[in-house]
Length: 498
Image (cartoon, rainbow, N blue to C red; front, side, top):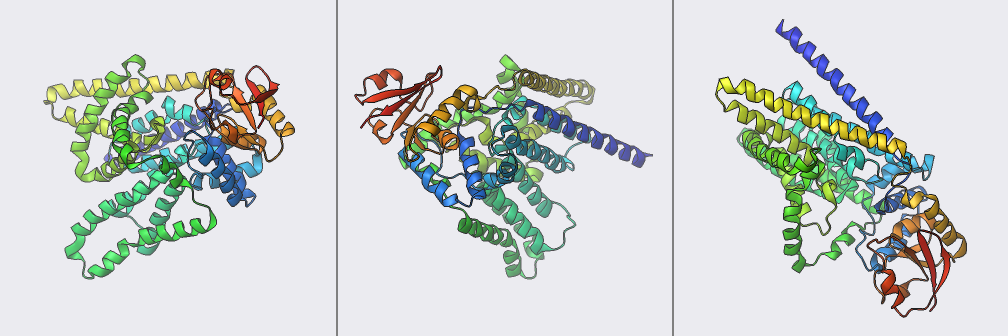
């Protein structure tokens, strides 16, 4: 009887998981718009994908080096890790610059992330708690809204979580894969590809090292050939190094250029500025509006309790999260919750575990009532998340051109003018130079001061106030001779006369 009930419960949880995944996929696809925001990281990813298809990665590297190194503001690395452009390249080969198609990998990899995270939680919490956490992540409005961008963060969320899943499987479970060589090569490749998608994936290597230390220490006395055991544990690193060397021979490296903006004297200032920023950052993804900070504080308290309750069996999650957070705290720019996407799922997991631990410490007459209140809280969190996500979907369906700035008709007219009326070797000064390069095939730089304007042949001014360009008032006092050659209600194009 008990076995039948268990099987029935598993069937119900499987059906609920499938329903959540299908609903999430439909909602994410429905939330896609035909446009994109002005943040031009997307342009660099697409340019890299194009260069893979045309076998011109070296040419991309040379041209983008000029943009990055000659701009007066920090834009990003000369080349992002090539994993995400590699993912985009078949999509671009089939659909070209179709924004909805280019966003499709986000929806696919987010579904895959939910499946892997569900497997990761399966042996740790009840079916009800597991399905609840998966649903809260699936219908979180921030995750849903974020997928309407061509960025690498969602694929990285999957690959990093998959690597954690493999570490958990190989070091904490009685897994069925007996071939040690194959399984550790797979683990090394998974860590490599996580790093190949986003540089911060390198934190998986020290995470693995810590886990191996405790694993080897626990089994040290049982091993007859200790040298052999050490060599076996080195396989993931050798696998990582092998694939890294292969990728280095194929693709130009440029990620480290982003770190040139950090000097040793800035490290403490960066850390100090990021500390409070990241401490409160997760509150931004909650759906409680003005009450976000209050409920975040409560969840944070439960998370600490959850860490204490599960640290011995789940220290893998803690170690990985600490390495990820350490990198975030010293990162030169603040890019929002996307920097800690890989930590957020564990935050919700530990918060739920912490609440359950606190309830278990109460006297039995109180446990039942407090458990009901706790369940109501999580259900309300899920309902509010779903409601806000649904509102995003409805709003975007009513206005499919939302966030269309680089792709709207007005921007298109300006780009067409640049493409048709400037020499191919022109340097365009524009506040989003990589987008300019993508749309016009012209080299471009971002300049926000008078002294560097002479680097360009043409200056494109957007009429709205954006960082990355010189203000109109300052432009008028620069003393550089210019001629207005194009104008519409959003942009003015000047030829810079030297």
